[in-house]
Amino acid sequence: MVGRNEPCPCGSGKKYKKCCESKQAVSVEEVQTEEMERLLQTFYDTYPERKDVSEFIDFADSWKSSLREYLPEEMIEAIALDEFFFHQRSDIWESYIEKQKKKQVRPSILGLLDQWAHPRVFIGKVTAVDETYMTAASIIGDETIQLWKESEKPVPAGVHFYCFLLPDGTEEGNYLAVSSLIFFPTDHSEAIKQFANSIDQVKEHTMSFWVKLGDNGYAGDEFTEFESGVLQAAAEFLEMSERQSDALLELIEDFLVEQQPNARKEVAIAAGAIRYGQENELFEPLTMTWKDIAEHFDVSPSSMNKYAKEITEYVLQQN
Image 1 (tube, helix red, strand yellow):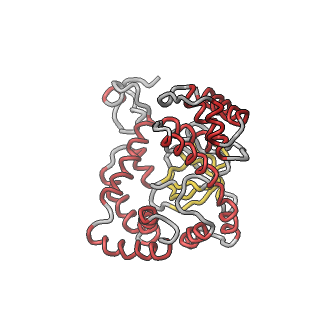
Image 2: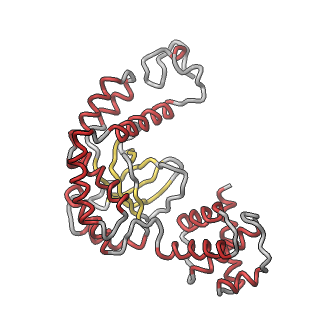
Image 3: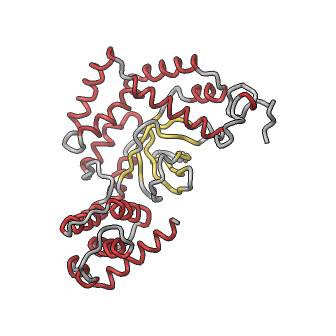
């Protein structure tokens, strides 16, 4: 229990009674998280400044010329933006941090900004996940970090990701992603391993990393070829039946990513998902029988029922 005349735990330097006593629901972590998000958003809202725009356009064009055959233009621009700020023109970020230090009064935020001078690129593999952090191992060397989860979307152990890191101000070894946190479908795990075996540091080889993935068939997709097949089969069935259910498609996405079901046929999972959606009123009822649905997907009723049951169990685990 914090005394009313003691320093406020949010780090403002004020007494508790003059600061956060009336905001009992706000924790120190919440205050700091909000400030971190504000600092990062302000940077991306402000930079590059007009005097640097032409240089950034030229830099982004060089990345587009190398990657446009593989990735969507919007994704290339996002990747190039971070490369520009944190590798090509790191002075822009460093200047921003110095300016923010002059505006801060909270010692905790000033201490955090001291740690934020040099973001670094990180390619890692998720090895474990809890409510707040993902444990991740670098593809180079033996570094292991705790990376703050950005959303409630499930992240399975075993997937690789790419981002720029900053300390999150809690404990040593805990980080957050500066901007884009890009996960790669497991289809490309072997290509990432081969890339890691060919270099001794990531920073100088980021372009070759994306080219390697592109040569391996990566096109900016969030899902594996198998997972995409399941989603497409379910979506096409709903469209054919003149039904719509964003909730069901989102559930299928989460189920596929988190549970990694091992099915011989993509359509077996799609059929099971449609049965689950019908039973749980996730779309307007169909006039088709279970046998009709199984026949549409060319799977046996037992296969359809198996995955309907697995999805049901998955949903129950989440509640």
